[in-house]
Image (cartoon, rainbow, N blue to C red; front, side):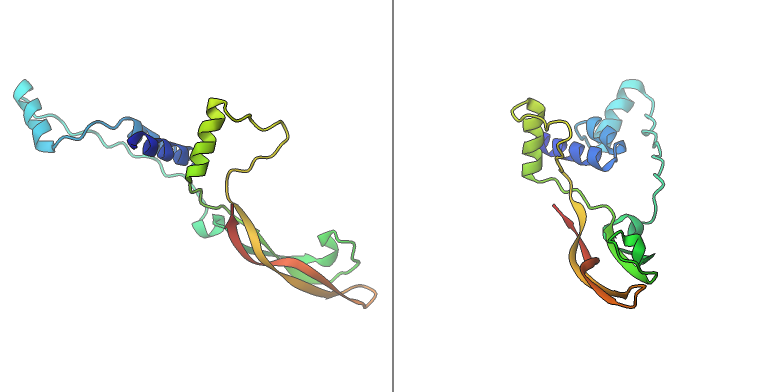
Length: 168
C-alpha cells in the first residue's frame, strides 16, 4: 500500500512540475528517534554529529494564483474581430474561460497509467488526442446583441462564457 501511495505522489509531482519533492520521497530512511540516533553516533565516535544541512529549494517564479487558476476572463473586441462574418464596428466584452485546473489522480488514472506502461493497452495513434487532465471550460453561456454597420440588430446565442469550471 505504501508503494502505491509513493507512486501516486510521484505521478502527481511529475504532472505538476514539482520534481523537487521527488528527492525527499526517494531518499526517505526509516525513522528513528533523534535521541537514539545521536547517542549511538556519539558513543561510536566520541563526537557529536552535525545536523543535516538544510538545502533551500529555489522558489519557482509564477504569476499570482488568481491569474493561473481556472476562471472567467474578458477582452474588449470589435464584433468583426470575432470571425463570425458580421460587418460591425461595435465593441463588445467577450468573456472566455482560461487557466489551469488541479490534477487529482483517481484510481482510474493510476490504473490507466500502469496499463499503458506495461503494454496491456496500446498507445494512442499519432495525431490521436488523449486528454488525461482536467480542462477549464464554460459551464454556461450568455447571448450577445449588437448593431451592425447597416443599422440592423443581431443576436448571437451562447457567444460569451458566463461561468467556468474544471471539467474532466
